[in-house]
Length: 248
Image (tube, rainbow, N blue to C red):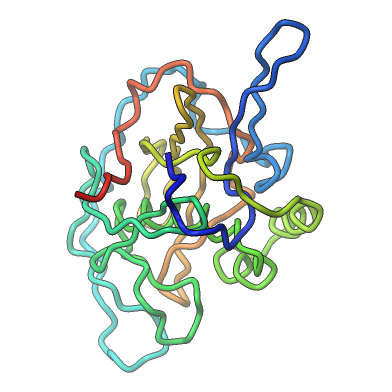
């Protein structure tokens, strides 16, 4: 999948492989190494549910900050629609993992200097924030990066404690990649998104709760509102396809 990528520079962001034991193929999903072994909060729907796509909240588009020199994010959020197709993205490489970026939705440099960056207060902005939140947890500098990108609560403390014990390193071709998304709930200041990952012919998902940081004017992740233990997807029909495309 990504064997030709540059040497890995971070921790293992969602390795999946098969192991043979007792004549049975056992699935080993190491997303739990990144996000912790147990989930903090249940997802909004059970796997396989025919979830109806949520309707965008009936609110006016958030207005940009009137002072462009202020040390807060100021990303245009005119488009409040929920994407029904994978949004255009520039896919960047982190080790062997590909993650999406956008000059429209984020991350955009934070005027306050945070490496987390700024994301548009819109359903699409929350989607880009969720994918980038997953990526930032895999860095070797996670103890600095993750607190910038997450709600400061007990769930964050628990995740950091678990992450300090996780192994480092990635293996080419053994890293699952983002392949789709599904909105579970959408509010102006809170969005729950399932990200689908694929490794070979295996699909799994996890659910990320993103909340709007009013002070910084950007999305951040909430471990306390996320289901971070990966779940094997028996069906992917409820997910909107979204993946990096090969160059050329």
